[in-house]
Image 1: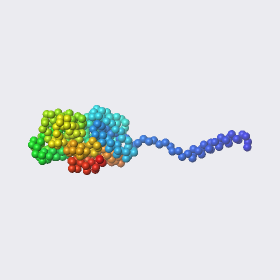
Image 2: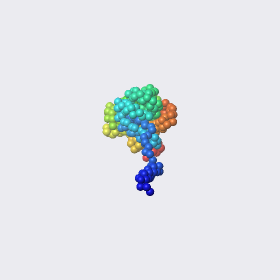
Image 3: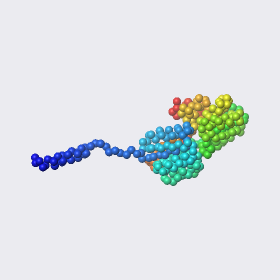
Image 4: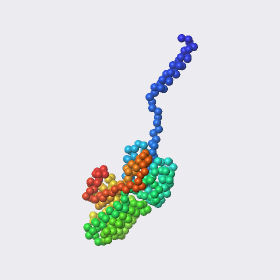
Length: 328
């Protein structure tokens, strides 16, 4: 072979080898892993067990949809913080907003802003004013209050209490559930004129705050027949007030709302006979994700309201209800 051809042939062989190696490569090209749909979840207050359960149910439902990314914020029961949380979500360009407002009026404008920018808005539990949102999911708080009131009216009659004195431990002032649960209760007790609400205080949905408030109401009003608490943690807080004052709660009807199947939830409280009755108030977390998928992926037009069912939990059915909702 001509010595002048050798360098040329060597270079040609090397080029062919490189080309064949490239053509025969089976290594996949790196693909982006970003999720197509980002959901902002603005929570009013993670300190409430019911709201922690809502977040957990949203997260669990979202895990069934790998195309979703849910970002959670906690307003810690501060309206300004929650407004800022939603504003950041808008700036981030989220695809859908889920919000459980701390109070109605302070959150109305920022929700309307998100809605005006074309972001679908699902409101859970507490409402905002007006109709500038996509849909609301929640139970009928007024109906629950009315059922608690009717239960109270009958219990007072059956026990022969005349008068039948009630102290009310309310939720956060300005939140729609507190207003509706209070109004509904008053409608329910109207069938028995012997039932009287003798004291009412706001404990902001917090059991720790309910204990001193209930203590003060019990000191001023030693004859109390019924404690109506707007949620189960506040009912438990009121029970602690009885114990701290060395009062016997066994002849007092203690009512809560929420009925979570968790270890510290209302269903177990009823089963253990710490409180007498509660009403299941579904969080709507799973339903919110189900509707988010329909809205984002199927361009579904949801109903303006989805009302979730409630259930009365008394000692006679507490064990059955606990099992039904996955508790032990």
